[in-house]
Image 1 (cartoon, one colour):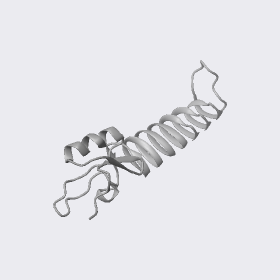
Image 2: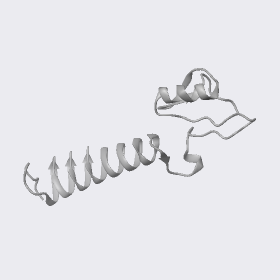
Image 3: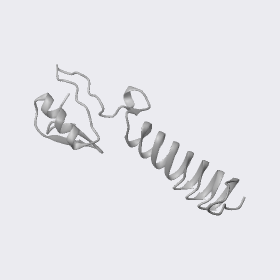
Image 4: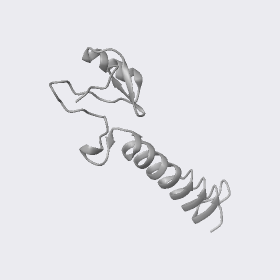
Length: 142
């Protein structure tokens, strides 16, 4: 259960600073399953995780659960990606329903994308909504 030195084959289980193993536990662990601070692996659990499947405070990958995350499918307080898991209630500000005949408005990851949609909708400016941007200077009131 010792660390693997740079250039050596990964151990089955590796624990320590920058451990390289199939199962890695420690600071900056790298492996198929990584647990620790800044884990990088197929399955990563820790503070700042990068991998295919992550559970972390800050995560980047395909399937992410955490506080501030970026991925294809994500669950978290703040996040970016095409699909927020959790049903329609979990799609925070990605789409507003048509109320009073107003058009659907969307939130975008960049200010430029929101400005382009504002032009298409015939309104001016954008406004921030969490870490996203929405077209029009003011948020529509229901």
